[in-house]
Length: 192
Image (cartoon, rainbow, N blue to C red; front, side, top):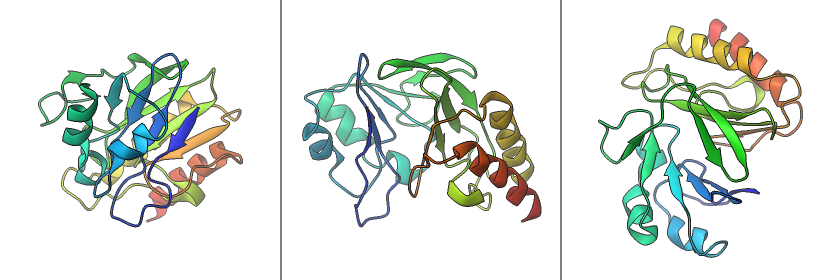
């Protein structure tokens, strides 16, 4: 089960996905709202925090979550404040009931990861791509348009047209032909 705990929140935050099952995980912690209470409304405990990347809107609540649930945070670069353990490129991680492959996808930020499960048909895209061909900003520190395009192409090479759901770092999740949205993002990133 995947729930966006930031849905309807009127604050500057990323989406926050609670993935329940065999290993209950919070993907990103958001910022500027009480995510701890939002988690506790659904589950008693979580096993870990997994980060798509460490921009403030995705990790603003990290310390509160780690304290409340006595959990560690996993991300690409453990030299970044708040990241306790590294997830390497192409490492397999358990999110809920499924195994996901972690894909290092820089361009929006150097430590950006996407997570894909072929069995579940799910992609957690972070801020790499969004619905309707939108894509992550590259005008921030560590942003790089060419790297972003290469990262989108890499994701397209890994996922397939059977992708059922794409959960993004901002905006609504995509459950109607998400593969096409990623293809469009690849096209749009080249034109911008």
